[in-house]
Length: 153
Image (cartoon, rainbow, N blue to C red; front, top):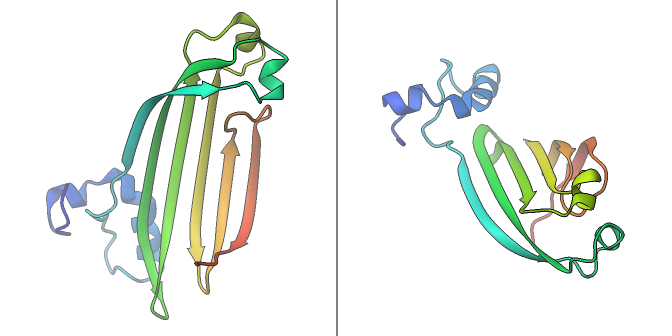
């Protein structure tokens, strides 16, 4: 991975194509050019989950703990500077899969979860966000657009 904008790894960074498009459209970059600074981070793990308090799961099985795999990928790309404020495009995807889920949990479709969130910073600490999917222990998939105000403490 390269921080040099002229390096071939920077020019062929497909992960930064949305960010490069926004920078080009906003006039920040004269030429369409992906950045060598915007590569995704990936985290994977296995979790032991205490399900004793989850009412939804308690209706499906009496298992109080279970193993769940998770994979998370995130990317943040600087797209614009507005009055000294750096604005970013960010995306995060999370996926969860329960190992050896009981048949009742599989029938209910609760052994696998996936969630995607894409956010664009707007000037003066505002942001526009799209979110779709579900995170444990949500029972329903949902998609929303949100306009938010960010406060840093």
